[in-house]
Image (cartoon, rainbow, N blue to C red; front, side, top):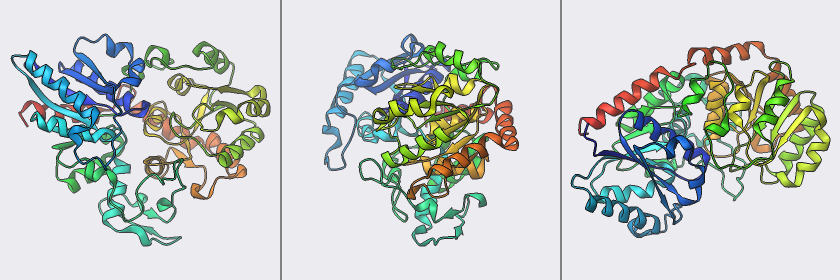
Length: 454
C-alpha cells in the first residue's frame, strides 16, 4: 500500500475508550498503516510508551472538550471539530498526496464524523463495547419490549434463546446524574443516530465470543460488521502463563499500592483463594450499596483485593473498610494493576460492574465474574457473561432494587466454590491463549474492504 495511506482513530475520554483505541492503532501499525490517534488532551499522559514510540502512529490531542450536546445546531462549529478540521487542512496543505483511507470514530465522539465528511473521508463507527449490548438494545427497541411482565421471558427474533428479555433486564437504577443508562424500553438506542452515515461498524469483540450478536447487527443494519477485538495489550496474549505487568503497558496512573506490593501479597495466598473487587474508573456504587458491600466483605472469610478508588464515595469509606476487612485484604486507592491481579493464580473471582474491558480481561485470564452492573452496556454485558458464556453469576437478580449484604456473601461463596464454572472459564482461556482467531479474520476482512477502495 502507499506510504501516504492513513487511517484516523478518534477516541472518547476515559480508559474504557482510550485503551481499545490505542490498541487498535498499534494493530493497524503492525499491518503497515500510518495512523493518527485523535484524543482529548487531558488524557495525553496516559498514552502507553509502545504507542508514543511507534513511528507509524501520530497522536493529535484536542484541547477543547470532545463532549457534544445535541443542542449544538452546527457540529462543524464545535470547538473540538474546529481543531480537528484545522489539523486536516494543515495536513492536506503540507502533503503532495493526502490520502486518508477512513476514520474509525468512537461512538462517544460521533460528532467528529462531520469533519471527516467535509474532507470526503469515509467513517467507520467504533463500538468500544461488545456486540451483545448493541444487539439487545436494538432488538428490545424493535420488538417494543416495554410491556414485558414479571416472570415473563420474551425472545428477540434472531438472538439466542438464553438471551430472552426479562422484566428485570428492562429495569434500571437511576444513574449518578439521574440518568438510567440505556434508553427506556421501547426507546431507540442512542447509538442508532450516532452511526448514521457510516459505511461499517467495528466492535471491540470477536465472533468466538459473540458470533450471534455480530451476525444480528450485520443483518439488521445491512452493512459490514467487524469484530476485531477484544483489543487488549499484545502482552496479554503472549505471557505464556506468567504475570502481566500493568506498569509496562498502561501509563500515567497513580496508585496507593505498587505492583511489587500486590505481587508479594498474592504470592502468599493459595491458588484461587482471592476475590478481586472493582467497579471501573468512572462510575461506582452509591452509598447504600457500598455500605452493604462493606458489610458483606467484612462478614466473608475470603481474601480480598478491593479497588475503592473507582467508587464515588470511596474516600468516605476507606478507613472504615480497612479496619473492617482487616489483614485478609489489600485496599487500593486510585489505580489498580488489574491485568496483574487477574493473571495471578491466587485470584479466583472478580466482583465487577461488568464494564466491557474488565469483563474481557477477566474472561481472557479464566477468572469467573460476580456481576453487579450499574449503568449502560454493563447490564447486557452481565447477561452475556451469565446466560450466554456461563462464566459468572449475578450478585442479585434485580440490582435496581439495591443489593443486600446476604446476597453478596452468598454470591461470593457460590462463585468461588463452583468448580464447573471455573473449568468453563479456564477452557476459554486455554482455547484462546494467543488471541482470538476470529478477531484476526475480521481484521483481515476490514483490511481487504478498506484497501479495495471501499
